[in-house]
Every structure is written in structure tokens, then in C-alpha cells.
Image (tube, rainbow over all chains, first blue to last red; front, side, top):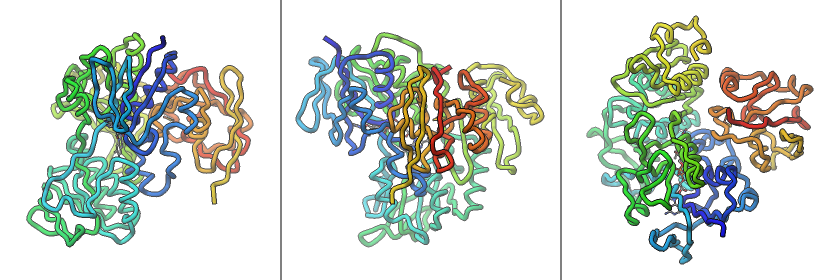
Length: 402
Length: 111
Ligand SMILES: Cc1cc2nc3c(=O)[nH]c(=O)nc-3n(C[C@H](O)[C@H](O)[C@H](O)COP(=O)(O)OP(=O)(O)OC[C@H]3O[C@@H](n4cnc5c(N)ncnc54)[C@H](O)[C@@H]3O)c2cc1C
Ligand code: FES
């Protein structure tokens, strides 16, 4: 009898696995279970064009509705997986049904980290992860409103940019001394701080939020000992991997479901991919990645591995962020000890920062600089050594360095 | 009012043609995905970051398209079997001027 595969979590990684399994010729049954009301959709536009209103909802969905029948994938929505019974190879669902599996893939993603300060439960405090979240925010996201954004990471800053564009009065609170500190180098943080200030966004760095106050709904943010009036609060302070199911089933989890370079867990019948996982990256240390690239590539490797075609996951991580008319594209994982080489002038709003490690490009951060990003990504993948002077020399086209 | 829709013909490498309607403002990549047309992977969902949505534009339509951005140009350098007629379909928006456009799909989107 043909095998059956069950996928828990109907998101970016889950749908990629369906697509890859069929592409690789898997003919058994596929069932995908998701706890949201929607079939798999892309999250990146949620804090960008979709919030801005220039991207309609139907465009968010990764597949047409007809795809699922065509691909032979039973999609069970509005339903969560409650427990995995490894010995019996079954998954218990919130609707009482139990799904038997030969192979199980966990693509449960990550949930937003909640702020625990006083007043955090007040109405008007928003998070941004799902379509439902944006709908809630959208309803109050109006010109003239004062929005306090907690967290100067990608999501907070993307919302700040959209807010400024739509005429909201925007203040960003960041506990660290610079923006996107976890993700980009100081040169980029400074550049983005200037751009946001130019757009009228107020930045409060080194300023942790202590409390929210208000009568029934949020009216003030208390931060750094001061009170700031606010109509809306958006919290973007990171995510936590959804690993409870795996953990309860006895799979190893340490800030993410542990998988190997074929997306396998310790159970030979269970794989995992996407935001919920932690794996040994191409540089040899354990990492948890929260990006579309990892969801796609790891799910592809999971699908291959489920079909006994093993290929080591070693793709270069990449990421992008849209703020105003600035397209930030990053490839590779930078370290503070890397040597930084700037190509182009930030004042021209088109430049790149290359990170050299032992003479080779380990990462690139590019702003409105597609060739630098694309060639840079290839240089990272190839581990090619290249002189800092060459990288910095704008008269040498990137193409010549590939 | 629902957006206007225009015709697009996608022709697979095998020669199989699909004529479908794509809404104004949508990308030609989204049109293909919406209609389950095989041969466009679109891994990045239209962020111009993956180069897996390559199409070959039929000669009579090439002049009607906007020029390639820097981004598209560079991204195409990394796609397999690139030809002068190559474009990234996620960067092409549907509009009245493209009604009836014919796009050929490559054999594979992955080098
Ligand atoms: C606002 C926003 C902007 C982003 N912007 C970018 C960007 O610009 N570039 C980029 O690379 N990445 C971006 N990301 C990150 C990217 O969207 C994620 O990395 C990606 O969605 C991860 O895919 P996934 O399949 O692992 O998880 P998800 O797509 O989150 O899917 C997981 C699904 O599983 C469901 N689930 C969890 N537990 C259960 C259960 N027990 N039973 C049933 N279902 C369950 C969840 O509800 C969810 O629907 C952004 C994310 C957000 C929220
Ligand atoms: S869909 Fe990725 S570049 Fe077009």
C-alpha cells in the first residue's frame, strides 16, 4: 500500500513540502492540518504592501484553491494537532479525529513573543503574525493616529515605514542601542535610523518599555521612565518556535525542534522544517532561522529525505526587508568579528556592506543594490576569497567577481 | 468593481498551451500560479529574489513591456537557459496593453 504523509502546520514550509513531494513523484496520500482559517499564505507582505493597502488579500495565498485537489492534498483548516502518538504513528486533532501516518512532517512555524509588562493585555496592543492580526491592526491604522511600536526589528520598522507613509504619528521604542541589532551591522542600523527620522518617525533607542496604561484601552506607553501618549501599540519583539507538540512527544527541542541536515528529527518517521526548527547550519553551528528561504529550502530537503533521496542542506540563508523605497537584501550570516567592506555610498541610498572572514565573503547586506546582493550571495556560496579593495572598487563590476 | 481581466497564454516547454485570464495589477507570475500552470516555481513569491519565475516573451510582445530593473537584470544572470527574450514574470504587471500576451516557459526553473 502507498505510504501516507501527514503535515502539521499549513504555512510556507508545509506547502513547499507538498509541492516538492509531488514533484519528486510521491504518490501516496498527503494530509495537511492548519490551525488558521486560511490555506497557506505568504507572511512577508503583511507588514509591507498588504498593510499599506497596495496588495489585495487574494494575492497572499501561495496556491490557488483548486491546487489542493489537483495535488491530492487533503487540507484540514481551523484545526490544530493536539498530540503525536509516536508508537502508534498517529496525530490527534482538536476536532477529535486521529490521523494515521507513515511519515510525519512538523511545519508549525513560530508564534510571536508576548510582552509581559503591566498593561500588556489592554485593548489596542497589537501583534503581527497572521492575516487576522493585520485585519485587527488595519481597522485602527488611520492617518493622524499615534502608534507606538515596541521593537526596532524588521517587522516593527516595516510597520513604521508604512505608518509614516499613511500619515500616522510613529514612535519606535528599542531597548538596544541600535535598530535591527540582531540582524544587521551597525553601518546599516545607522543608515536606517536616519531614513526613518527623515520620514518623521521618532526613534527612542536604549529605551525599554515598562508598562502600558489606559482606561479599558491603551492610552500611554511608559518607557525609560517617561509617558508617551499613544492610540495604538504594535509589539514586534521576536518569535518563539512552536515546538510543544514535538516536545510533548519526546523529540529533542532546544529553542527549536532539533533536526539534522536532512530535516530529520530523532524519530525515523518524523521530519521538521521552517521557523520551528533548529539545525546545524552550513557554518557548522546550530542555528534557528526565521525566513522564507529556510522554510522553502528546508522543506525541500525534508521532502527529498522522506523519499529516501538525501541531500545535505547547505543553501546560503537570504532575507529581505522593504522599508520606504529601500530594498534591503541580505545573504549569509554575518558575525561581529567579520571585516566590514563598504561598496558605494550610503548617502546615495544604494550601497552594500560585505563581511569578510578569512579573506572570503561570509555575508552581504545590500540596499537597493541587486548586483551586489546576487553576486555577493554567490560569493558566499562558493566561499571565494576576494580582496577588500576589489570589493570596494565601484569601477569593477560585480559580475567580474563572480 | 472587480478589476478588469485580460488574456494571457502560457506555453509549456512541451508545447502545451494554457490561455487564462489575469486580473489587472497582478503579476504574470501570480497569474500562472493562480491557474496551476506548471513550469513557474516562484519560490520567493514575487520578491524578485529567486529567479524561478522566468518566462520567454514572444517577440511581438517584448516592446510592450517596461524595461528590466537593475534587480531583474541581475537576477536573470542566475537563471538557467537565459535568452534575450527572458523576463522574470513576477516583475511584469498585467494591464490592458498586455491583453493577449504569449509567454513561453523554460524546461526548468532551477539551474
Ligand atoms: C509580518 C511578517 C513579515 C515577514 N517578512 C519576511 C520577509 O520579508 N522575508 C522573509 O524571508 N521572511 C519574512 N517573515 C518570516 C516568514 O514569513 C517565515 O519565516 C515563514 O512564514 C516560515 O514558514 P513556516 O512554514 O515555518 O511557518 P508559518 O508560515 O508561520 O506556518 C506555520 C503554520 O503552522 C500553524 N500551526 C502551528 N502549530 C500548529 C498545530 N499544533 N496544529 C496545526 N497548525 C499549527 C501556524 O498557525 C501557522 O499557520 C515575515 C514574517 C512575518 C510575520
Ligand atoms: S518569483 Fe522569485 S524572482 Fe520572481
